[in-house]
Image (cartoon, rainbow, N blue to C red):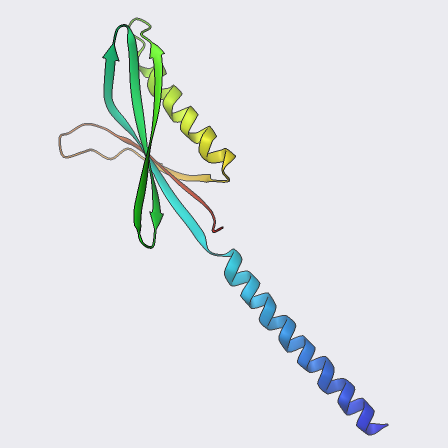
Length: 127
C-alpha cells in the first residue's frame, strides 16, 4: 500500500509540474505583442474638386517595418479642411480595429520642417 501511495504521489507531482510548465508556456505565448503606428500625412492632394489625404500604417516586424498607405478622398467642402483629416483617421482606426488592433497612445510630434503630425500607436496579441 505504501508503494501504491508513493506511485500516486509521484504521478500527481509529475502531472502538476507538466501543467505548470504548459501554463508558463501559454502565458509567454499570449504575452507576445505586435505593434503598428499610423501617421496622418498633412499634405493634401487636390484634383478636380476632390481632396485626397493619406495615412501611412507602419507594422513593426522583427525583419523590418512594413508600410501600407490608406487614402481617403472627399469632395472639397469649402474651408472645412479638418473633416477630411478626421475621415482618414476614422477610416484607418476602423480598419485596424476590425483586424484586432487596439489604440494605446497618440502623439503630435513636430517634424524637422516644423509641421505638426498626428501619430497613433496600436498593439494586438501576436498571431
